[in-house]
Image (cartoon, rainbow, N blue to C red; front, side, top):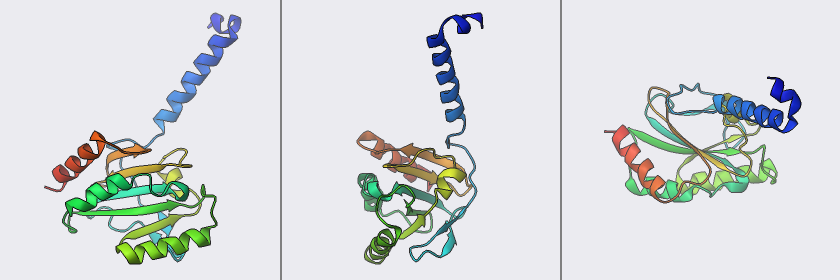
Length: 177
């Protein structure tokens, strides 16, 4: 370790590598078991994430400013019309990182729930991001699939596109057989 004293650049690189290693160790990973958390519904009432542990559940955890980022994946899954008794998709709006006021976002969500007959919850304080170690979720979307066993089957931060969409749809088909 004497070389660290002589070369501040090497010391900085080693410190950065250690920090990155620690950050990766705390990220949500496939195979990890998750616990349900209390969030809020569109009217700001406390609620748990519904259906966890009863079927395959997809969660689109979106910063409200990036709410449409993974619509291509959501559309591909919806087009498959998977059986409701085996699969359910839902959205959770990350309100904390949004620039828009929460009451406006909640009004938009209420309209989408009625229009699409879907479940959309809200997370006003990064509760899910902290509980499941999602890291920085500002201006992005995190797609998470949780099995009946409460284990993570898939997790992806950012836009899911191209062949990755086909891979996810195939994964769902295999998991609900």
